[in-house]
Image 1 (spheres, rainbow, N blue to C red):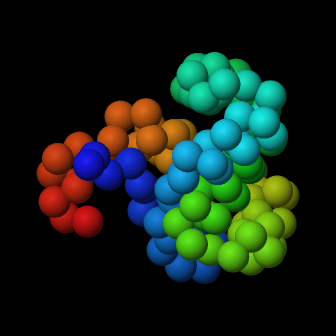
Image 2 (spheres, rainbow, N blue to C red):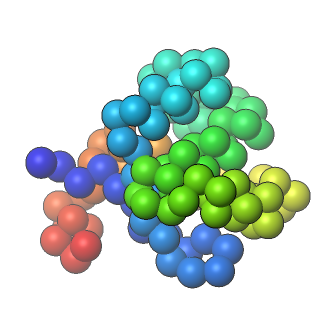
Length: 109
């Protein structure tokens, strides 16, 4: 099975970001867009702030962070930060889900 997770530093530590099938549906519901449409918006820099925040929050939950803690992390490390700090992370999370990890990255973990 292809690894579709992304690992990056966020806020206070390094985290893995991953969507379960159920959370991918929740992302679509919360952003009002299908996954392809959401990716198109984010990749074309035509996103909403909610697109970025929910991508990060729900993928934290998908990797095992408690929902309450994920909400706190978004409030602390994302909501009031410059967009340029959170947009690359959200983009990388969506790219990993869309494309999977490159083989050299998957081998490293």
